[in-house]
View 1 (tube, rainbow, N blue to C red):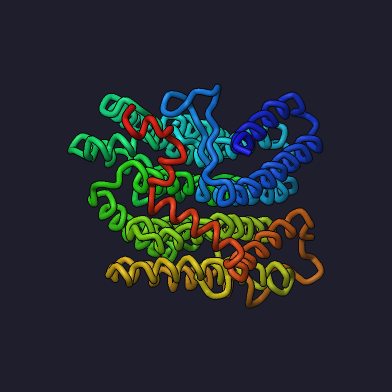
View 2: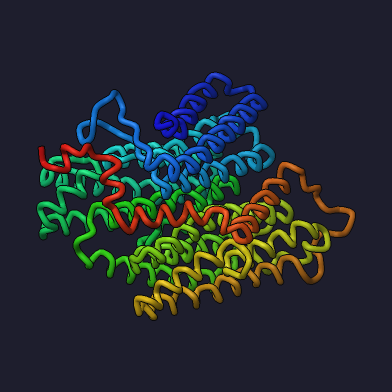
Length: 497
């Protein structure tokens, strides 16, 4: 069973390399990439089921026991994220087959999507912080290509900012790793947690933890988000949906793993995360309110989601972690859903400004009500997927007396609803800009992926109880890191032998 946890990384990489040799066979690339991601999704579902049954899964590469070798670790938190990311990527690939264009397909689009999801899954599963850096770089290198693929001027302009910011963040990551290793002599995350507990979190380790906070905040778009709006608006809809659904979640996961496992003995990072989360939510709300371009409004909604998830980390209780886990799963699905809807609106009208769209629901009624579903889900209206996470985080904040945090978080729901309602009322109602009978046909490979995401959004809300055990198990491990440490480190090492 333990050997399974490497497949979400290995299968996409092997397929990506294979597809290089079939550059001109577009049909084969589409079929093979979608089948590969479907298989990865099934394997990930088995891992999600296996963790509560068999305990936290661990795979030691080459047989080297921790803390000396590289290892993968699958707890319920990582497994849920891998499953959701793989499932959403499969759906986005279906959408991309009709919308991305043959030019990009011939220039290894599917190869780089598979490499990106390999980096994402590897980041979720690694138990070694240097290997986290490696997986980050695999993900980012693939995203550098995807953001520029097609060579349009706006893509090239925004990619420069995106690449430079991430190169600086990667450099800071390496500096922090160097200081961490020189201080503790290990890069195994469970072993780091043990060493920090034994030695105490002095000024040097606190400084290192704050550097990690800056790095992962950049990756997640937490306060340091100036690169994000342009970078997520420039690529084609399928790529933008992948970025919005996945890239910030890796930074969020790294923050959770860092401050619930390795650096748990200083309250300063938690206070900073709370302040940064509130400021990110406020900035996202202001951007969503002032935006007139549908892509810009969608991107600032990504920032609001990032801030809300990290309120759960700032509160730091098990109930807050449950809410954050529910909400991050919702956010992966709902942000992909939103960006595919926005991309389809642009595809149908050729416009990006909301004032220049109207009456779409008359031409495309099913699509119109799909947008209504994603609007309600992102606003947290029950019984859709965003509701459960918001309620649990609010409950935890009230219990801890963090009234300002939850006031900002819940107020953002009203702004999200208003910003998306602007799009819904302006673009879908009123006088249609497309004469009836002259509308562009909506291919099945465009509408069915959006319907799938709508069904997932509804299922995650209505069927939240079905995954409750997995979410509770994941939150227990985050709140009690000794469970993770016990699953990873040999008993002799923990006794100092």
